[in-house]
Structure formats: C-alpha cells, structure tokens
Image (cartoon, rainbow, N blue to C red):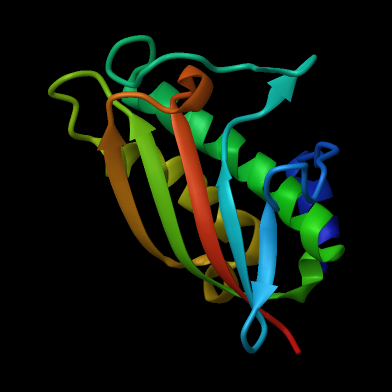
Length: 156
C-alpha cells in the first residue's frame, strides 16, 4: 500500500515542516533502521497552534482525541520532512503521548486513541499499531493540549 495514496483517500494533507531548526532536529535516524521523532504538537495556522488549552477544561475527551489526531497529521508531516518518504516506515514501535490535563482528569488513554487510530488508518494494523504510554501533565509548551513523540522502525 502506498502511504501517500492512502492519505489522499483519507483526505489528509501533509503540512510543510522543517526537518530541523537551529536548536534541535525534529527526528533522527539511528542504529539499524530506527527513527526517533521528537515531540510534536497539533497543526498550526499562520505560525500559531490551532488548539490551546487543557483537556478536561477547554476540551472534552472527544475534542482531545480530535486534537491528538491533529498531532498525528503533524507527526506524519514531520516524518516526511525527516525521512523523505513515508513508505519507508516498516513499523511504528512506540508512542509516548503527553496530555495537558485539568486537575483530576484521568482519561489520557482515550485522548491518545485519536493519534493511535490515525496511525492504524494510514499504515494499516501491522505497521501502524504500536506500544503506547499516555501521560497527563499540567502544562505543555505554548499551552498546547497534546504532544507526542515516537519511535519507528524503517525498511532497509
């Protein structure tokens, strides 16, 4: 299956991203065909994040899952910028999701399902399903609601 054809079928457009900036790389290949992607947030418009706030306050669980899906689109865009071809992805190994959570909010896994479901939709179960941790935090950079980092195995 061609990943870009699948993205088109799903109506998903990748957003332009830089593979690195002056301070860090968005992702880095290492070892035998592994790729570490640093934390990315949701989609941006005009240089500003579209989603701001905490889940359990400004966002419901369902809205948080939609934000996590948006983070997935950003992650795919960042991966494309780093490796040049999403068809190189052999397996998404591990996902670590951070959810900016209101006091007492404890449904971080339900929020992260938005990200995980997108990876399976795009890559299929064998490639897109992954091990995952979902962590609640009181605040994330720029007050975004969800941030995700990922470890990926690439094809040789």
